[in-house]
Length: 72
Image (cartoon, rainbow, N blue to C red):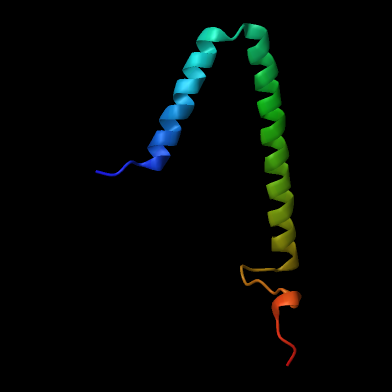
């Protein structure tokens, strides 16, 4: 039987959250919550802008790197 890395990461995250909930005061939870919301919204906005740019410019998964193409 092999170790499922995804389940291991999930259980470790849940354990950290439970321990933090029992040991951190409420004010630190507010600060961590605000920081998490700001980081999440920033990453979401970055991905949204990136994928909208790809959609609007018609770029696909095919990568055209000019520096890797040989000169024919």
